[in-house]
Image (cartoon, rainbow, N blue to C red):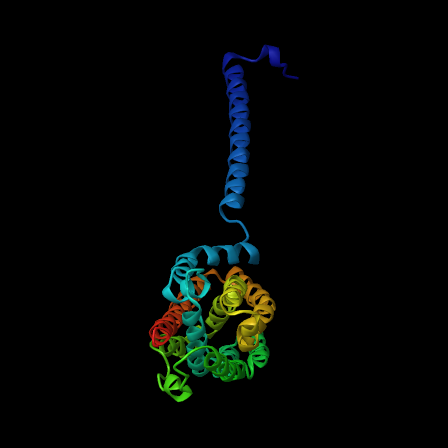
Length: 294
């Protein structure tokens, strides 16, 4: 039997080399395991799973410039400013009510058609949600019609010259209203009809953000009796709280499921805000001219 302590120099050298090889291999495996753990940690940190809430926050951040632009536009500033005089705000209500009918009456059909396009593209859940939501928008233009009739009586009881309703309606659709309609039609006909959610989210967020300030300003300038002439504004402050939650839910989910949807959604929401802001500005300019007449 061979004993280790009787091995020759060559055998001892081989044994030492084998020991050094095993030690080096163990160190290599230890370093490799450490690197694998670091890579796994880096992957987890660099590719977090996006939630609907964080996805919506990303959308809100990107559309922030458009919302700020709307907030400083001529129309909304005049609507909530304490410096706007009573005649001008009453004249604005007249023009806003009359000239908003052509861009409010089609809303139900716009949303329904966007839903149908989503379903045609295989986006069944989105399409079903839009079609269901469209029913809640049916007949909302009638608020404007009724307000306009009441505002004519209000104006004629307080100021001259008296209102010629046909002359106000003769202005037709504002340039901003034309753009607003075009935004809807392009979304419906285009490859991303789900962007209707972004349009609805932005427009229905406006009464939530500005509605009460606008109503309070009108009451301060014109008295509480003006509330009988503001059914569209007062009703949508309440309606659109729920609508905004509905749209926010779907926006966040859509973006979290497919981040590529973010850019077209932001573009559609921005286009709708800019167009509607232009519509309000035109109504305010007409009101300022009308209110200055004696």
